[in-house]
Image (cartoon, rainbow, N blue to C red; front, side, top):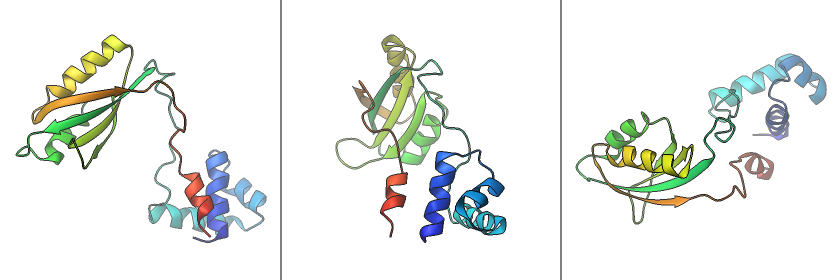
Amino acid sequence: MDDLDRRVIELFADDPRIGVLEASRRLGVARGTVQARVDKLTSSGVITDWGPNLSPEALGYPVTAFLTLEIKQSSGHEAVAEQLAGVPEVLEAYTITGAGDLWCRVVARTNADLQRVIDRVVSLTGVERASTVMALATQVPYRVLPLVRELS
């Protein structure tokens, strides 16, 4: 990744609806150059999504919690993960090391609704138990741009 790649990423991150022509004007390079860089960054997996970032809070899910799941070892992580993908309130799930087997970020409408979400997750085949930590406030939101800026 060179300086132009970083500039392209930052420009589209700041203004995702900019369009390739306007990006080429702002960057001072040919339209085809910007398009080629975007295509390369997308095909190599650096750019993974062009969709809008959504706010669970604005959608009516202001409660965020992190579940550490213990699973039956015979069930396997993939089988449980497939079921977790079917629970809309599960935003992400990771296989982890340490005390648990899987870590999930979930959202709910209220604290009482969080209990419903936890009950649903624990009822999945292969899930033995869950321990829960509730988020009180977001201090550093998900971000990747600082990594791009560190590449030199």
